[in-house]
Amino acid sequence: MLYSEVKNSNDFQDGALLLIDKPLKWSSFDVVKKVKSILRYKIGLKKIKVGHGGTLDPLATGLMIIGIGKATKQLNTLQNEDKEYIADIFLGATTPSYDLETEINNNFETNHITKELIKEKLNEFIGEYDQVPPLFSAKRINGKRAYELARSGSEIELKSVKITFHEIEILDFNMPNVIIRVKCSKGTYIRSLANDIGKEINSGAYLAGLKRISSGNFNIKDALEIESFEESLDNLINEK
Image (tube, rainbow, N blue to C red; front, side, top):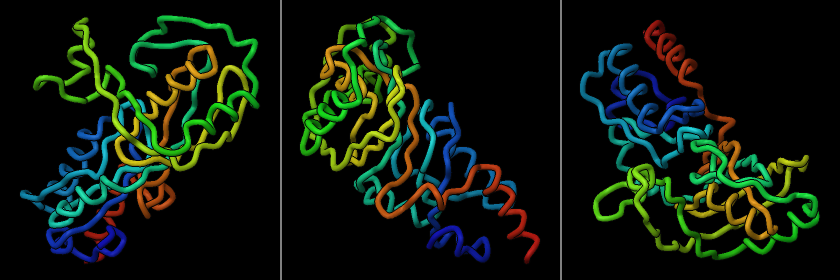
């Protein structure tokens, strides 16, 4: 059941899906930990399973599907659903992490960039695509996370992964930024898309901001902020 249908604490053990709007700079683990903490201290659920249905980077915001109780069994299936994002891409520069986690390492010419050029190149991404994950990612290489190796200065190479871009459209173009909506398959790195866009337009690009707006049939418009979730639990307790 969805969290909006929960009537009492027993419903959480039976299984509930909670939609959370992840705050900026929180890790996905931070969200899971906070939800578990709230459930423990607000309604006394000392032992309760909590997990998520798809990681978001700390510098991304938006929809996270949180499984509570027996609903955690659904999370593997939910992770396989298509995702939709709003991405703010900065044109004319690159960073090693493909986003704002690291400093700019190169600047590029941008006088030739037009909205028409961006649109033309975005259309070329539609369909199945061999995408190389960012070096600063959670991919494992010989048992270690890629970002750990990248931060230590180790030379690493990640293999490409087949993903699918279903839809990509420009929402706003105002140099040096372009805002796009992306609908894609699971496992897609929008940071890598930003970097690849920069290459395709003979310049550079990195991800300046990212918000996940949907995952499968779930939408950000139905998600709660952490504070709102905590307040709603207070209401649930008071209604007993």
